[in-house]
Length: 456
Ligand SMILES: *[C@@H]1O[C@H](CO)[C@@H](O)[C@H](O)[C@H]1NC(C)=O
Ligand SMILES: [Zn+2]
Image (cartoon, rainbow, N blue to C red):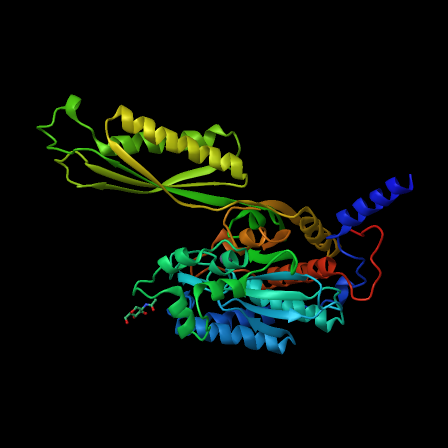
């Protein structure tokens, strides 16, 4: 009986392990100046390869380095301890009462694809710094350290590899693969990082310095603009993200024998373009076939050759993107597309090859992180909507290390990756407040006794 009770208590403690301790922090004591955050975002935007309002900031270029210096300056002004790893991830930490405890993390990215805007990613970095500053200014001492990270190169612009910083943290980057990704001038990541002042002896050294584990990361939550129209359209203030969809991409090539469009009679043809057409229609059918609204599949790239009106297409190249929040369901669609490609190739007597370009795992957000975001939103009196992140983020890879969640704020017309991307100072302030309170819940209050039952 006593044993039973002990194990029940242990189970309760384990279940409560991630749950927030009782936090005395009053939402009203959080002072967030949305306009000040916007001013900082617009200052960061000036470090751009194109004139504002367009923003272009590419990994380890002069403007990226200037942006990094500014981010570190903001971290220092917020009283955070700064450290960088050799991949180029930058951390600012608010110490916890227990400095050895696994940290609670937030953050996002500051790189920007060509001709993007001022808010994608940056809102989660500068807003993250503002959240930690608000906690500090409110006199809140967390039990666990709270860190804000600027992830290195979330965008794939320079090396054709997205989320390199967070992939490295999760141990999902391989040295040889990273070395194989060269920029337009043949420069490697290691060379570019070294030139930027991130001195690593080797790829192994670089990847090792970035590695995070469940022992040093307790939970992670990212603030981001929605990049979709739902919050604005429905007049909701905060998006509580429950899952992050992830893509798998395939490159399929069909090759036939071509021939003269007049001389080559129909029964003798093996037209590569028609094989591709059949496969494209199958891709749509396969996505619809799961019956789930979250399964999407697209043939967004299509090339044939020789591209002449009087020539039977000899080659057809398709790139296929399949996304879902459910990994096995998405992978079943991918597998069915591969089988169908083989079947079509046989039927149409064309050769074919399939390359899996990438296949990242979707993430289900940590239930306790989602609950902490929801409770913080409710406590602040903001309206909210549970939603799925259709775009993917560094959080996808952080979810491989620790329970993870995301906080979305509305952005005008759902626009992003364009110069007129915009989020209002009020929406940014609300997002930062929800983030601050969520981090406080996840980190717990220093010195306070753990509550037997959480106050979610
Ligand atoms: C590649 O080299 C050209 C010419 O020197 C330069 O303008 C460009 O910025 C370089 N690209 C990168 C990513 O450094
Ligand atoms: Zn982003």
